[in-house]
Length: 129
Image (cartoon, rainbow, N blue to C red):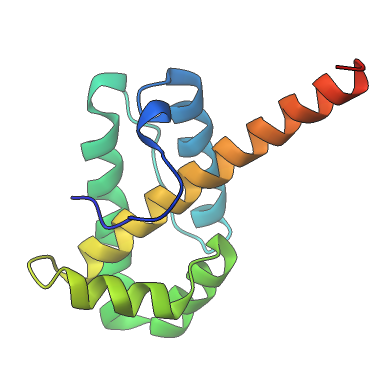
């Protein structure tokens, strides 16, 4: 499932183990702020399906029981409501919770990649390059 078409090319980062670890840790941190546990996947080969299933379970529960908490979580992660609505329209073959889960994973990955990029860019700049 790829609901994340924009100008950011992410494919190169999806297979980098350190980026994946940082992304999972960011997700764990953000979900913990709202009292939801996410376990670090035990197998790096199965990290995406394991993580997707955990997050989708939380998001499906929030969609039915606590939309306000879901809205706060999505605000924290920085996923605009309009992006979700557009993704729902473009991908009616997926459930709402699946669409949101994909957007969450993508956004968290994007945050990690940008954080690393700017950290490395700053280090290079300080070295006078």
